[in-house]
Image 1 (cartoon, rainbow, N blue to C red):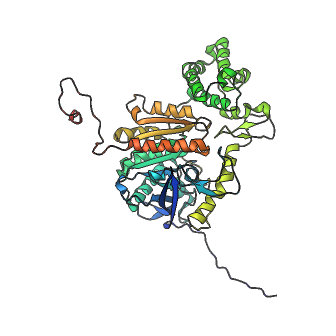
Image 2 (cartoon, one colour):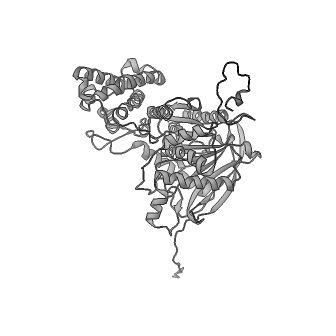
Image 3 (cartoon, rainbow, N blue to C red):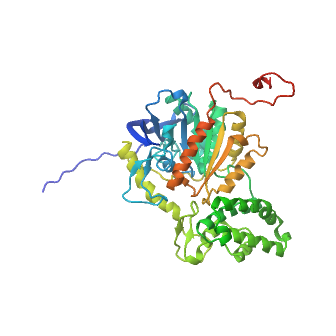
Length: 502
């Protein structure tokens, strides 16, 4: 018997800070064949001395039959966490390829990738960016843990270095003339809201639009009674989906029922919780009865919580008698706990379902379709804790960016069944960002009958991408239209409108 011994020298897994692999593809969108290139690779994050301190993995899709890049929009896409890779919107929402799931978003085998007939690649080029420790992005090995923490893992550190990375990317790809858009999901909405102002103030890069998918609180305060009450519309939507409401409400369409719940929340529930014990037992019982009517919970458990029902308890309680829990990020999903008793579910049924379908798909896609070969682990969720959440002014930063830039528009997309970043608090964000209403004509809200990643439901995938197309079209200025504010003409003023402020 012959034995062959192959000597193996000591090796170290090193992140390339600067690398690219470009492949050519086609996809059919809205019945038209779209040719494009896909560039997968890493681009450096530079420090103050011009040295690379990290390599961020990205995938850039560029339509090849459009030569006029000055009028071709560029969409820069981030997911959230913090610590989450760009995988979710990349292969399930706006990109040219989709993972293999059923029409409601549940895993299917064999795992794989197919064309996305709803991709926005027909109207915009797209780059999906993975911050440090997400996807294949890593800091250089020479940085200490303390330096990595300080440079990358916090609200404002994250915004600062990513703005610099975007500046480099736009310069390398010759996209300074292009209309530019940021889209972020979940914590990615915190990220892109802060980036809108940072790009303007530190890099003199002005955007046409920001899209917030399932937005976070954006640093907008809503403590106490407001935080407690604002969850009720989401509870009502979830109860409606699971058909546990009384017939009078259940027979209404979801979007016909929710305004009634929203009005109750604002006009009655917030004032009632504010009153505390001074509300009195009789009025407290009447409010609890209405909450029970809208939420599908019993009046008894609502009174036991003094009208303030925690979301975790709601996920455990709503279907407790049937032996199920409901999902946090998407309450259409149901789970099974070890025991029915308890205050919160054992696990998140929606998240484990998503990881089941997304993880094999993105690893297959990067290596087999994009031809990017590496032994580095693709982090669906990477180690970024502790995360510095101090000085979160991102909602106000976005407002300031819009005030400074008359061309900047905002669209919010939310799923009605999202209990982590709920749709009613997304509306509340917009109301409180601009309480005077001076920017409201450049803000829009879109709701969908699904959860945190509303695009996993095939019907919402089509609708939400179409909403992005329209948003891009509507936010592009007409030829010759200046970026300026104009005053109303005074009586008898015959000067052109664009000179009334001079």
